Length: 111
Image (cartoon, rainbow, N blue to C red; front, side, top):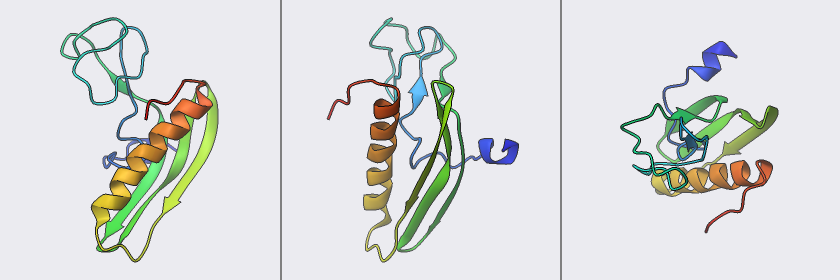
């Protein structure tokens, strides 16, 4: 688990799962927290815990792991193949990761 928590490629399922270090609100890639109006330069933001392994080659993108939300662990796996553009899968994974987080943290999803 410690090795999976050190994954450096976090641009797939967990890309937008960054939390404000002051008020614990999900801030994604924003520069200012919408809840407490703190600039990310003034606080230590942190990623939602996600022990995972990614993989990508031409036409294939994968991300699989265990995401911790409100002290509960959820196994999440997203596998793709036969892609003509890997960026489509990556954007889909960003979206799905946020949907999963919102659902299990009981927060409304803004589409």
